Image 1: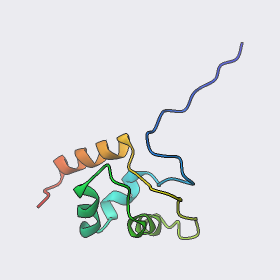
Image 2 (image 1 turned 180 degrees about the vertical axis):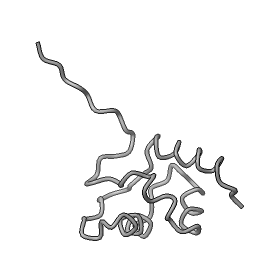
Image 3 (image 1 turned 60 degrees about the vertical axis):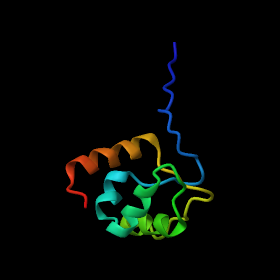
Image 4 (image 1 turned 120 degrees about the vertical axis):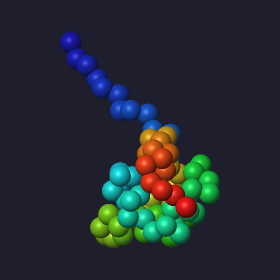
Length: 89
């Protein structure tokens, strides 16, 4: 008898390498870039933001994902929890 484990579903498009775990880069992301992301959590991230995320995670040598990179359900939930924990002006 064999069993297979299906990976958890993530609604983020699988274009290239995807983003590193949000817990690594969100707290370090500069506030103006955070504000831009918060304006529309469902919108694709601009290339400048994706590049900064890779820089913060020391993934400069990795190629950026192609196409529109969007936050997944878990990433949006992380941000929602973060907003409750942080005094956001």
